[in-house]
Length: 253
Image 1 (cartoon, rainbow, N blue to C red):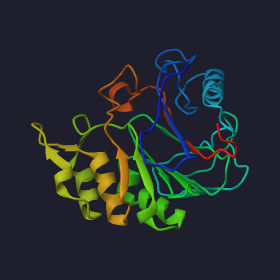
Image 2 (cartoon, helix red, strand yellow):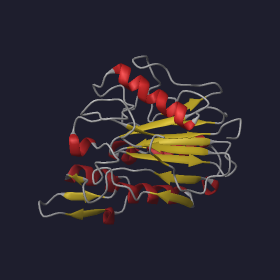
Image 3 (tube, rainbow, N blue to C red):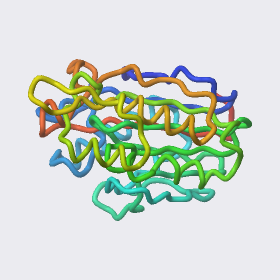
């Protein structure tokens, strides 16, 4: 079995979610070993094998819908039958995706940025967002919730592993970007170097709460602090990517 995290959240029965860890794959250092990122310099052959191992281990109904993530707020609507393309082929340029179809597997790649998974109360609408600091400050969560269309009060959200506040040092320009967007200053604490420690999960949680989302779980795992389980770009610079997956299978497993 490939080691994975299973999100602990209150999504309805029938919705499936998983978060890959760094072990159980075929990639050589510094991408060792279960790297699913095709854009980080790893061997395409290794990435293909790693992705297929995930598909097999999770019995996914389709290849995950890999996005070309650019730290923006574009939301891709995945229609019935949507599935990922081969390594090296063009992907939808977006930092979030929503679907109302079964057997579509949403995928968000990360190695410090915050992945956020969302499900409607009945599980018929799913959303997934890549919330690095730029996308989070610019409104990627707001855009994703809007694209899901239903009442935010009925949504369930899970915040995946990301860089934690003890390791996410930022400059004044990052803090100002969030403050201008209405985020609370207590998400930042000054450090001895006169810079700021930023709490991404706290900011994301409060943004979802402001939208009216009441059921929010996760946010407790720091990618930088755990090199055994997690890739971290801030810690290692050249490294692999993990993936948060979300889907609703037509056939119950």
